[in-house]
Length: 135
Ligand code: HEM
Image (cartoon, rainbow, N blue to C red; front, top):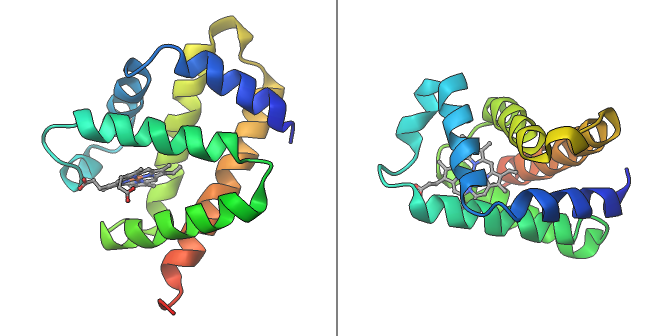
């Protein structure tokens, strides 16, 4: 996985601002309409926190000591929101679709593979933490 390429790509995508999060949730709720009711009616706060968390994850993608505890906390909180392991698949698909859309002609197979690998680790750490009893 090329961490710098992920960082550069996310900086490019993120420069579009909040529309990135709007696109992501529109894609997710079109894919899996039953997930809509898990989220608040008004989504503007959620748009911001999602982008903030993604930014934090990408900036520490090559710093395991910082990233893992962050993801474990996030995973435990998601357990409290009713998020289960099977929800991570559609969220990953929407994330990749969003990154591809905003990358435009710069999207390529290397980026797709690296993002899929990074998201796989994120989902794994979050779901494993959610499954562990709180110490
Ligand atoms: C890369 C993976 C994910 C990231 C970075 C992420 C990020 C966030 C953040 C930052 C929050 C705000 C609350 C908090 O920080 O605890 C949140 C809330 C939430 N997330 Fe996620 N999330 C991810 C995966 C998922 C998945 C797979 C689902 C399943 C549908 C999901 C559903 C929710 C729900 C339902 C809330 C609470 C909304 C509310 O009631 O305010 N998230 N997420």
